[in-house]
Length: 598
Image (cartoon, rainbow, N blue to C red):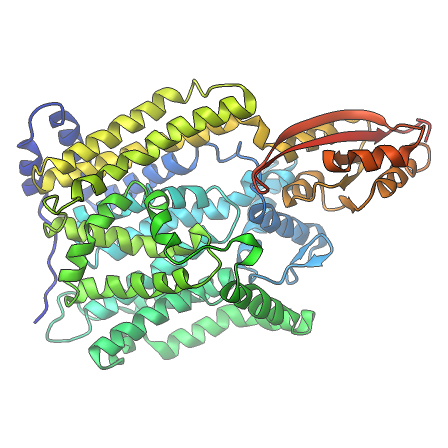
């Protein structure tokens, strides 16, 4: 009979960490106190997880510019829902955006509408409001990871797993971006936690926690239904593939009956069918052809939008995207293989490995695709720790553990170089936090490498989480705002706002980034030649009010030639670095003002 094994009690862990002497003793004692505080009650655990999440996600939340290209596409489409009042169709300027379902757009539009009602100035151009659903989704994903981990671990271990996930770089990034992935992850981990309770409680003679409750079943199906509204079939694919693997292992799928499939399928249809029927009628079926035929299958067949990557790319990127937990997770692989026959480990492997292999096989590679797998990775890591599975005696294990230092050191050097190269400044305000994050990462490595017992390993993970909190504040809160070269579109929008007229019409020749549409406005005109730009300006002035044309440097000669001997009035110039293109960019602005000669 397979039984679940739980983590140690708090006093045992404290005894292990108190055996450490020297410079590590103080940090490990403090880490143990944090763990003991969190393990005292569910309320304390959740409160502390929320504080860690907010500390990781809020720095730079409002000051970070719209990040091309996906974020401003989502935000602009949500803005146009508010502008038109059409909550069914999804559009980016005049183009139908039939790639993802409506869930994220509704959530963003609701957040912005609430901001307007509360009196937020220029709410529809305030990117932070569009990011609120992602922030809430990331926080929900952390709490749901804690809930899911309680099916595998006692409270102390469950909290540590959730904290490790809260601290990961990829979740921190997605919490700040007005996209689908943070909400998708919350839906996926809700389904995972419910699936875990059904699987681990499936045999009546072996149950320790009883069958899945009605509440658990409702969480599972709501996770699937809301996940479908956010990103189509992804959450059902995650849960369905894991359930299939486990059912094959079990030789039966009867254990899934605990999840009340009849009730659940009815609830799912009730949630998702109205909008899907509405968009099918409104688009004449074009939405499904675009979303399935071009967006989803296009990514399967080739590297969509220049995001191709070879198999193994996610495994390599994992050491950055899941920092600071990646090095610890890598050390748990031998444990997972050795214990793969146990129910708890089998479930974690079934959730992680099949989908990971599919993502590695698909040509399109984007780091956030594997984010919904990371809560299970965090749980597996802590489960290995509580079972003594993070064995530093294996060959190369200490070097793997040392990878926890790589990211903070690399970011400290890389950001300093980038700030000097791009803007001729150094992030001096951020350096103390960057160096402190490096120091905590080094302490985490030493604590893990000294083999001082399980308590020291828990302390190492806790120190790594603290390093991530400091790194987030340093990178997003203190370094990012000084990198003005990356904020090309907001600086161009500021030129428009500085014109001595209301609601000027704007056109762009060359620069076509979605962030420019979001910051300038839905009616931004996209031009194709210098002659069109000159004609656009000449229709302004005395005839048609205030106009502004933005000319990228690669079109400057064409624009100058089209002007002839009547050069337009210069209104400013912006130079910077286009993150999406990976190249320097320069844009000159020319204005036609009321009363000026054409």
